[in-house]
Amino acid sequence: MESKGKVLITDKVDDLLILGLEKLGYECDFRVGISQEEVDRIIYQFEGIVITTKTTLYKPTLEKASLLKWIARAGSGMEIVDVEFAKSKNIKCINSPEGNRNSVGEHALALLLALTHNIVRASKQTEKLIWQVEENRVTEILGMTIGIIGYGNTGSSFAEKLKMFGVKILAYDKYKTDFGNEVVKECEMEKLYSQCDVVSLHVPLTNETHHLANENFFSSFKKKIYFINTSRGKVVDTSALLNAIIQHKIAGAGFDVLENENFSSHTSTEKSMLEHLIQTGKIIITPHVAGKSFSTRKKFAEVLLAKIMALHEL
Figure 1 (cartoon, rainbow, N blue to C red):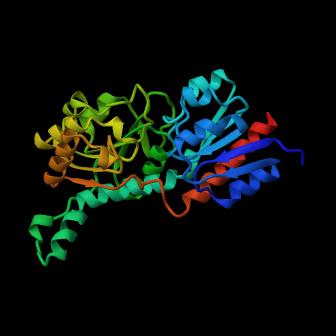
Figure 2 (figure 1 turned 45 degrees about the horizontal axis):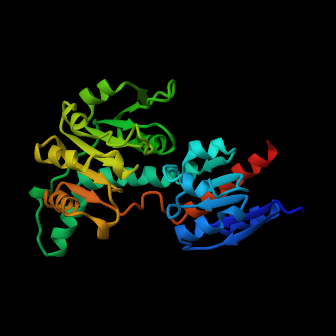
């Protein structure tokens, strides 16, 4: 097969993707751990690039990409790519949110059950030989109203997991309509504010969603809520979240992401807020692993390869 040029792969991917690209006629340059500076220096050589979260493709980098025809993101979030500038250069941008939708949906459910059943707190106490029963009496989610903000791949996956729990599911998506069914009821934000016992975020990080969950957001709920975020850290204003917990507007919060996930770069304010959040005893934090199951790497490869093949059929 005639060569279609070179593809830069900047992180670990499943062999399925590499073999598939080679069958399409690409020469794969596999560089795990490549620095941003090195990407900027060599990107002019490549017709395609596969990235995870460690490489950014903003305008200064893309201006150097004279041959680039497509960008493939192994994952969902495209905030690390200047998509509009890429489009202006006729560079196709694809991602693979289908690849980890199930894993994220399961993780959101796990966070909710861990919060309502006091799993983490009770386990830590028992490890210290503290046997507290009444203090760890659980809250059943049966009969609760659960609100989902963003009904894409992960939001709909979370809803699928909830079907068996006997809950009422409400979903809001600014950019989708007519997605409701016999289980999930499509609604506006006002209904979520008035009815929800639980709210889970499943939105991308954009200028529009940055600090979507702010002081006004938390103060608008009529009930004390359980709050879940498995999307992006900067969708939530950490200070507003802390205030909502202190003001007893949040029964518990489970999140897989933080505004700043690089602890070594935390300012004194960021460090203080995180410490204060932990001290409330109302939160569970996991280190951005919701979409990183043992199965997702292969699923990402399958999805990306199918989409890259589709680009060649256009």
